[in-house]
View: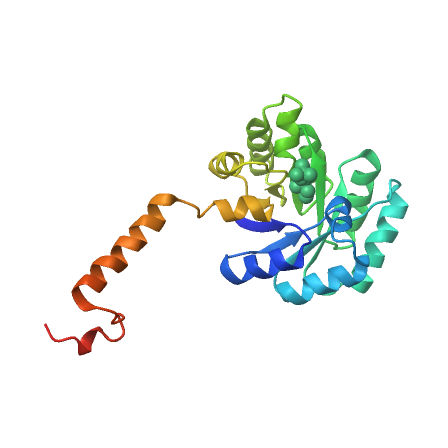
Length: 229
Ligand code: G3P
């Protein structure tokens, strides 16, 4: 199951890639503009931080299929290595995904709200299908069920797509889609950091160290064989 960072902030990406088992970085126009930097320069910097083996997801902005394909080709000419072109799952977007995947380009159909949008995206050859969990919930939809049904459609009909769920505002939302079988999640840095945040774990570590030091002083595990008992 893939774990992706949903951010273009270099400091966050640098920290998270160092500490966590991260498979890639997703961006979109709203995420990019927050950084107030030159588009290509920022993407090159992200590539440098994540290395060439993690996937970098970059979204097109055009609304017409031919223009989307042109933007995708421009991105592919300028950003190297493992790249996924994100395209919103509109009618024109699906046409563009079909054309891009026919020429071997890896794509993500994004901004998905319903199982049938997911089906069409998978049928068009999208590498990833991306339901927007929090945004579905904000519209009073059952996001977990949408993710579950897209996973079922893909697996039952043997499509090659993976469901990479996005748009998370709580750890519980991520937990829920992990359980129902999403193939991956893309998570904002502040939510990702919360995965490991538990008072009991911190307290346990403190007690292990206190008890060890009460018995052996400041000696580390490595020096433990020098301790005379
Ligand atoms: O990749 C962006 C997608 O995750 C949307 O997130 O937080 O804007 O709903 P949000």
